[in-house]
Every structure is written in C-alpha cells, then in structure tokens.
Length: 266
Image (cartoon, rainbow, N blue to C red; front, side, top):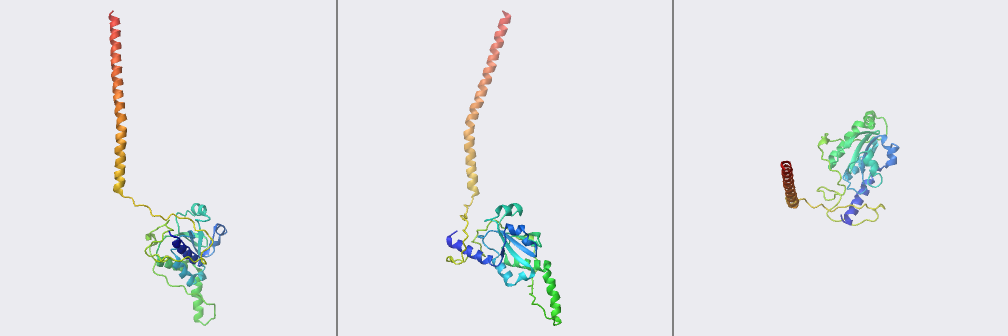
C-alpha cells in the first residue's frame, strides 16, 4: 500500500468516524450500550470503512431520534484481547446488534450498502418505542393539536435472507475492490489538516504468490523419489547384514553339534 493510499484510507475513516460514537472497554463495562438500540462496530481505525455511506445516510435521516446509535470499538489498537476473548471477535469489521444491552445477533459482514441500511430501518421499526410514539402523535396532529416536530422513519425495502450474505472478514486493508467508493483511481494528495495524530499501524499489503498445484505436486514427487533413493541403500545393507548374521549362526550351530556328536562317539 502506498503512502497516498494510506492517507486516503485515513481520510475516509476520519470522515466515517464523525458520524458514529467511539466507545472503548470502559464504556462497555459501564453499560453505555444498554440503553436504546445499538449497532457496535468491532474493528480498527485504519480499516477500509465499508459502511461509510450507510453511516452518512443514518446521520442525514436523524435516526438517532429513534434512540438508535452506531458505535465503534478499536480492537486493533487498544483492546484486542478484550475483543477476541470476551466478544469472540474473529475478524474486522464485526457488527453486533444490541437492544437495551441484550445482544440479538451478529450482522453478516456484507459489502452491500442497501441491505444494511434497510436492515437498520426494520430494526428501528421493530424495537424502537419512538416509532409507536410517532404514530400516536401523528394522530394528534390530525386533530390540530400542537406538538413537537416528529421525525419520519424512512420506508425499508422487503426483508432479505441475511443468512445468505457472504462473510468476508479479515480483509480490512483491501483497497482494490470493484465497487470501492473510498479510493478513487487517482491517488489523493495528503491533507495534513484531516490526518489525526494516531500512527498508522504497519500492514503487510504485499500479495501472496499464487500456488500452482502442478508444480507443488512435482516438487513433492521429486522429494519422495529422493527420499526413496536415500533410504533404499541403508535398507539393502541392513538386509544383507541380517542374512550374513543368520548364515553365521546356522553354521556355528552346525559346527557345535558335529563336535558334540564326535565327543559322544569317542
């Protein structure tokens, strides 16, 4: 990964982080996620923010008015053991869905924006008490009763089978996805005003060499042939030695028997 690409990822992460709340180990211990609806990102500051546009739409739609918040825990920097041991986080990003502190499930790691945003809308509609309050106060409006401005929850698309969503974790550094909206084809110039003081963790972005199975099989066959040649020689000597020892023992016993017989006859 080039310096320009790292700067681009940092810039995108900073932009995404402005629309969500950062929480850490102490916040979780104090139960900050036990009031209202939470989707908590377990990830790293520098990973490719796949859900940047979703966070922007959530912020623009004022979904926080329905007691919904998106939070983030930086596992890679501060609480890696806590994330992996306590919450069983296996890869970044992992999204856990909470209702008043109760873990519902893990949201599948999908690269698709629309399914995730619609999931959030259905999640709010099902669990937020503010949705029912909104419908009640809307009826009061029809009777010209003055009240506080009530936000309108956007309509969600039909529910999809989330179990079929492909999970792709552990690729937080990927920047060459087909539909990646974070990094443009042209490298971004470093904007020092938007770069935080946090160091960019080192990452090994070199692609692994492809494995050619034909070559691998040939190499293994060569090793087997060499091993067979190396071991056949000592085995042959060992067998010959055992045969000579056996012949010697038989000859010695025959000699002893003949001598004993001679002494008895004399």
